[in-house]
Length: 125
Ligand SMILES: [Zn+2]
Image (tube, rainbow, N blue to C red; front, side, top):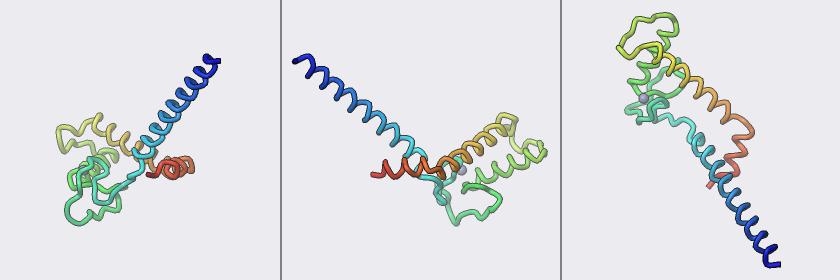
């Protein structure tokens, strides 16, 4: 009989551990994407944007001045103007921008999903 009680206690403890892990995992996903985009913080480097927001309707996200210049250089690169404006403007640099923009679009799509909304509702502090 004591063995049955021990087994039940152990199963209950393991269930609590699993539920705790699942909760922390859900909170990590929610917090990683919950801040979205702050108009006063550069979406690319995370630095605060000083001064008035830069009005660039062609930029999909708020950028600080240097990142906005890099984004424009990347767009020129993608249009075929491959004269490097800086030594780091290489195929790997363009690939980094391409994948970063893909990542941002995927995060936007996930944020707009019903599952993410549910995740946020269940994990609000
Ligand atoms: Zn920046």
